[in-house]
Length: 202
Image (tube, rainbow, N blue to C red; front, top):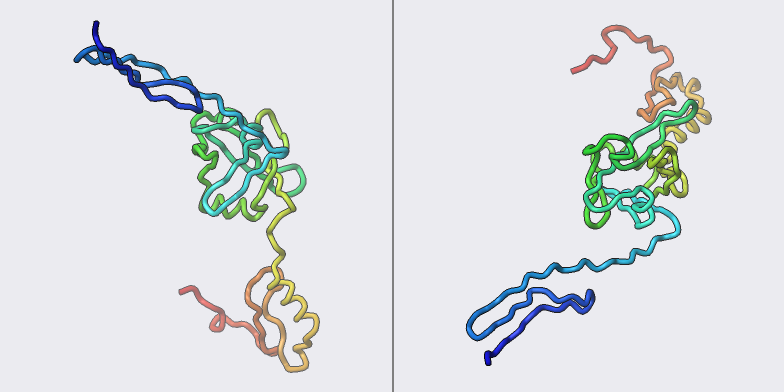
């Protein structure tokens, strides 16, 4: 009769045993086991939500499911020009766009790196988006609560000042433009631009 000692690791969550070792006398026998992956139940939210942060996009479970993406999937964002209106962003996996291998990778946390100018441009539309079907596997990014881009307060203020101050009373005139957010320039009403007075690039 020989003494047999059996040791193993047990995972109570998956109810699986692994790294089983049998010691018979002085000999050690190992039994290789394949650990069965436990099925994780993911609760889907009612609505898809994609949040734009400083350097990344964060997808909730519903958005990931709608896009058909998971860890190490790739996602592409493009801008579409409609017949009328402004450009709008669309999103989908690399496979949905027929561009396998392009786009940014999805992390284990179901986020995607998205920084630099691309982040800045998208931020003009909003920082939280839901999805609206556009084409097969491709969705429009719809800002939640509308665009966060604010009208230029500087332009509005300049226009108001221009309407309330009559510079001609002081021998002056407006020399700037109210179509952009540039600084306002005031000139003498008698001023006539010449080559010598024109600004030159340094």
